[in-house]
Length: 286
Image (cartoon, rainbow, N blue to C red; front, side, top):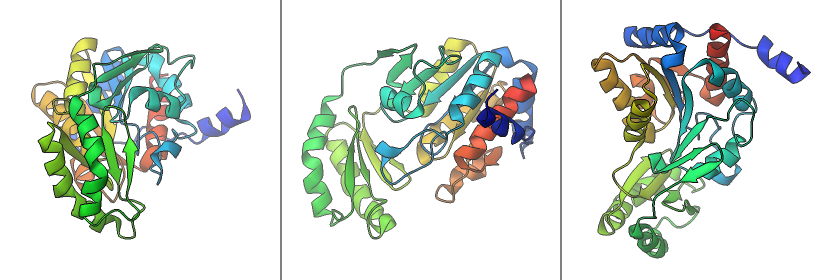
C-alpha cells in the first residue's frame, strides 16, 4: 500500500448515522444485503467540487479509490449526471480503472449510457440546435450578458451566471426568458446552482434512477446529490420507500440548495464527505 492510500485509510471514519428512521432503514438494508444494493451518485458537486468553469471540474482526488473499494462489494455503482457521459468519465478519471469495469455512467439525465468504454445514445433533439442559435440574443435582451457564459453540452446547452457581478440577479433575469425560449423549441429548463440548462424533456435523474434499479433488480439504494436537478432522484427514492424498497438519501452539503438538505437522511460535507462515506461503507462491508 502506498503512502497516499495509507493516509486516506487512516482518515476514514465510521459510517455516519442517518437522522431519519427511513434513512437508517435504508442504510441497514444496504449493509445487510450489499449484493442487492445500488449506490447512485451525481457528479458535479457530489463527486467533484463545484468550480467557476465546469471544464475544470475534476472528481475529488480520492473518489476513484473510494469507488473501486466499494464497487466489488455491492450490486452496482452508478453515476447519474446532466453532463455528457463521456465528459463525466473523463473528468472523473473512470476509464480503464481496475475495479470499475462495470461502472455505469448515465449522462444527459439518462439519455446516454457509458459502460465498459462503450457509449450508447439517441439522436440529438432538433430543438437544441435552434436554441443554441437564439441564445446569445436572448441573454443580451435580458441584460445579463456581462459575466454570463454558455456551456456547450452536445444534447443540451447551459447558461452559467456564477461569474456575473451579481450571480443571483443574472440568474433571476434569465430564468423566464430562457424558459420561454426553451418552450418554443420543445425543450425545458433545468435550474441549478447558478446555472440554467436548456434540454429535451422526458428524462430526469428520477426516471433514469428508477429504470436503472429495475434493470439491476436492486432491493436497496443510496442516492447522493447536491443540486435542484437531483430532486427528481430524491422523489424517486421516496416513492420506492413508500413501496417497501429501502433507500438512503444523501446531500452533498450546500448552503445554495437548502431543499435537498431538508429532504436528505444524511448531509455530508461536500465531495470530501461523500468520498469518506463511500470509503466507510466499503470498509464496513469489508
